[in-house]
Image 1 (cartoon, rainbow, N blue to C red):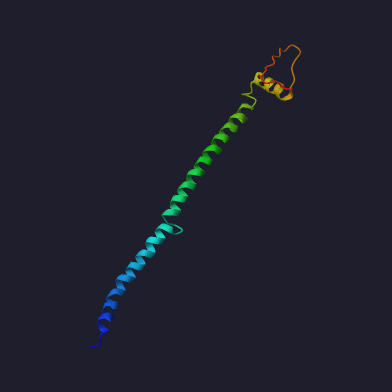
Image 2: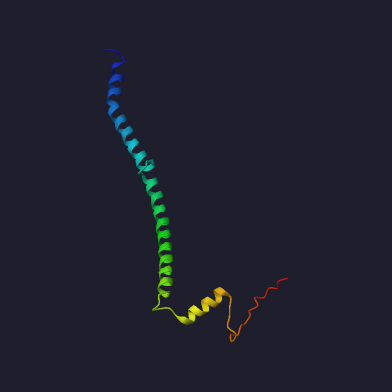
Length: 109
C-alpha cells in the first residue's frame, strides 16, 4: 500500500459532508439575502406600511370631497352658506351689511 491511500480515503469520506455543508450555506445565504429572503421581506413590509398610510390619506381626502359634493346637491344646499361663500369668494357685500375689520397685530408699511 502506498502512503497516500489513507489521505485519499479520508478525502473521499469528507466529500459528502463538505458538499452538504456547502449546499446548506447556499440555501441559508439565499434565504436571508435573496430576492425573496428575509431582508427583502422586511423591506416589503416597510413598503406595505407606507402604502397603507398613503391609502388611508387618500381615503380620507376622498371622503372629504364626497361630503363637499353632497353639500352642493340642491336638496342639501344651505342658502345662507352659499351666500356667505359667494360673498367671500367675490369679495363683495350688500349695502346693509356691517363689515368688521380684524387687525392681526402686525403693522404693514
